[in-house]
Length: 139
View 1 (spheres, rainbow, N blue to C red):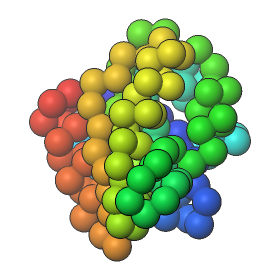
View 2: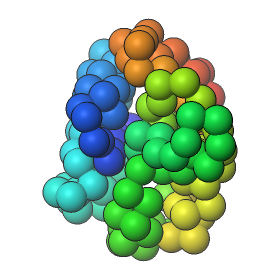
View 3: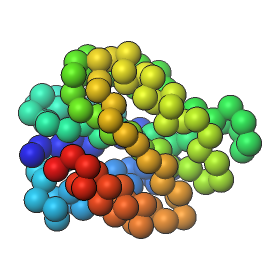
View 4: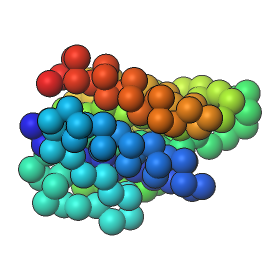
């Protein structure tokens, strides 16, 4: 199985989470590559059986949370029918960030099959749990 992890990061937390997810996937026997949304590896995206998209959570602490720089998600190429998982990093409350990411990606044709929030204070643990759930459900 091939996977590509595409992420949008502001402070480096989502970048780190995406890299950890790719490494955990590789340790599980999945070929995986992580790339920023501003430099998508289009060959890896084309070859991928599974797309994982991550973003940071933007908005107010208790309301209005959304994917950071959502316009970059909206500018992604069409991903018709590609099985997709989403994740977001957050500090206090992710709100409906995953729901909003799912809506954007489904608008691009993705088949979003799940997602998870990852608290920035435990990126390593969150990445391991995300991949464990993913492998159990998908691989």
